[in-house]
Length: 322
Image (cartoon, rainbow, N blue to C red; front, side, top):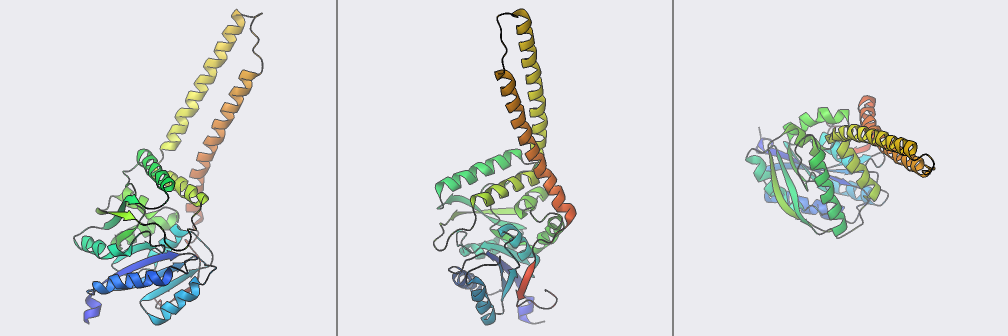
């Protein structure tokens, strides 16, 4: 067996969508870090979400020059989460490191992730202690993490996005669960199953080049999906709220009934109390139906068994990997 074959292999997965200004720079940055720790073999997997700029041609040029670079081009934009999941499904390394192509999560930490992994940790993740992104966006993220932490059925990590290293044996276990629901995030699964985890504090950079493709709806969708996948407490809260509103309505009805009996001539009930009560109950019902709908959608995703993504093209993958 050759020396190269004895080396442990690190897979670096990078998701991108319209990142033509960052792809080459990211490739150079990752390659630089991996060459500094040359006792490891590595592969770089770019997963492109059907970019409409020149990203795909740039990726093909890089892959043609460097066989360590593998490229997956998706049929359409399946989103960063699902694209990332498919990326580590295609990884062949002993460990997987996930990066975003916008440089907000720095590649500089790759050597440290690997060192901590070698100490026996299953997961080595970066944890944001500070961020140079939009302060309002960072505040909203912090508020979201607090809500998830309170409502989740399992302990959750704050300010952890999935940036870091995951051992191959963990990916093999998570593969089974995420095949059932492609939107069940790795972060939620890791917290639920209690893998040995090391958190490394870092400061998140501001995006220097290009423009974020993650809009307000994407953040809202991710927040709701994360909540219903990690907690059943909203269902219990709905039960309590429904019971409380029912009791309140009965008490108000009794009050008006008694008051009308005792002040028959002077008290005119009118339409206002009835309309207020109707709108209040209707609003609560709509909210409850929405929450129930989210849980039903999780069940639907799991029983339909759709693929995580549909791949249009794969480059530099061997026949047994394709």
